[in-house]
Image 1 (cartoon, rainbow, N blue to C red):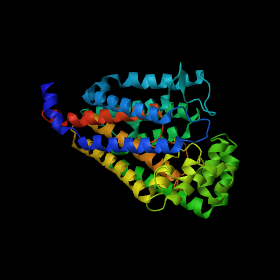
Image 2 (tube, rainbow, N blue to C red):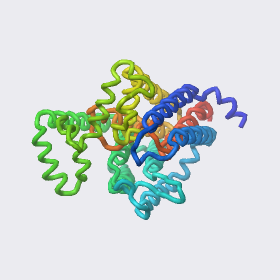
Image 3 (cartoon, rainbow, N blue to C red):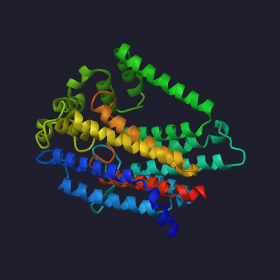
Image 4 (cartoon, rainbow, N blue to C red):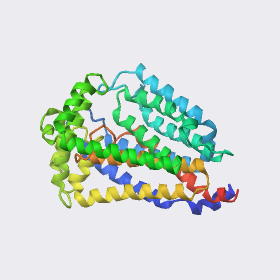
Length: 392
């Protein structure tokens, strides 16, 4: 304990400050999107519940910080197995808005896919650290093929819920961590492949929009690869004119709200589209549109800057720890947060398809907030023990 107390000078207080500011943004945005909103899906007393979850999340983060994260390495299989059991258990509960994503019990509800993301990070970090620390590390696919089924099991269970957004986050986590784990030659191949795929997708969507839409209709939908409503979200991204009909209404209104905020915003409580409830599910999936409308470009930029600062501080911890296990956890958490932030904000401005991903630390919801704070507690625990690890 004395050593831990001395090492508190290594605690990243900047992360604490950033998270407090994100919490303020979250409470303001939740209040703006729910007060007076006639939507029947809005829970009772949302602002009070959000504040309670913020407090609980901070407590969870502090406990996670004091906890020695290295103990997670011993129970990585147990955490992974628990997440799989919970992902299967959701089918024993009624679907919510067409998706089996929640476990509900006596007023308590929990979303297992949030925990599954963190469990996957811990399992992958353990495996990759074990390879790094072995006498003769082998990074080729012939020895690391086990990563594929370990990833595919939770990915498939989440995908068929259906929860496409959460499934995509699992892909982002795995690719981010494997990119850091692979040899330099493999890293170059991975990055070249990602760039090629993204470039081809962008060019195809721009130059051959009708052909891409036809392919989606005749192949993807016909063979039940994705559902109709998911296709409609992709079509909204590919063709802005598609957003004017009922399927693209959400993203159309979200982008309109952001545009109406202009430079400094309409002021807290003065957003016409936000206060009028014109953006569906604005307190969860489209909460950034409320910040854009009421706080404008300046307020939105401050929020994005906070996310950039958070990711930078996590990367800094990853780069300064001598423990491979801690490094890989930090890399996985960065990949998880960075992808969710880009996808959520990008979807509101036609930069990416809308997939139902919430904005970390901002969107309304208890499970995601608690798991995100727990992840940050583990990150702070890694940073707190860097100096001790150096002298072991």
